[in-house]
Image (cartoon, rainbow, N blue to C red; front, side, top):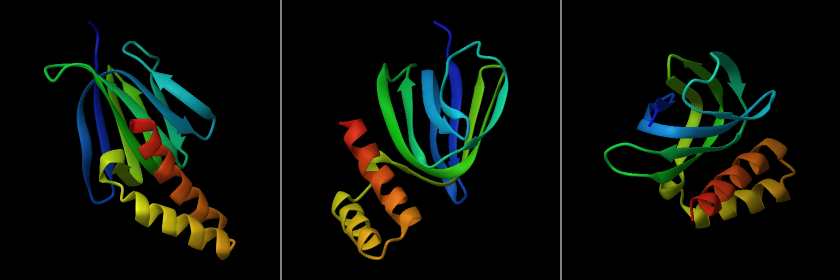
Amino acid sequence: MAELHVELVAADRRVWSGKAGLVVARTSSGDIGVMPGHQPLLGVLETGSVTIRTTGESGEGTVVAAVHGGFISFSDDKLSLLAEIAELADEIDVERAERALERAKAEADDSAERRAAVRLRAVAGAH
């Protein structure tokens, strides 16, 4: 089975690294799915969820992350997601994200509201 080598990196750390059969991310051109053999690409990541369908020694599964800005690059079956901020769904404190969403709505802060909503969607998408 063909695989991608995926690196999801935030400004401050490596968030996830491993093998995958499919990665779906939101770019400035819309949602994109990348599979082994995809044409080379370079794009701008938008705030949204990234879904990684894992393969390899640990078996098949799904990793979901909330990503806030950055870049996506693919060539030679190597996919790099370089994000300003990225959190795996299982790292997200749901209560804190819900409070942030309510606060952002009360303050009419659209970008903070979008970030909090993406974090909650990532958690929901992982379960």
